[in-house]
Length: 62
Image (cartoon, rainbow, N blue to C red):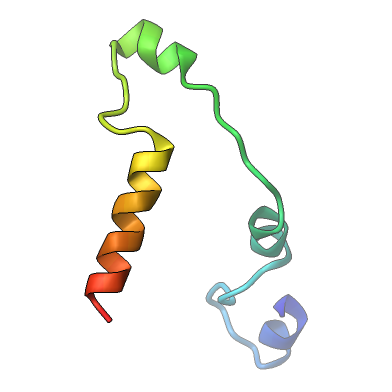
């Protein structure tokens, strides 16, 4: 995509770059221990609850 963008002499960033494609194709996991230790922050809902709420939202909006 970057080469096509350059070919048309575009100065802005293309909508999809190799870097972004790699990020989207990679699983990311983040450890929240430091967030809890330093900030005292904990999620208000766990992942199962969050995905259930998301599914309910999508079902109700269609």
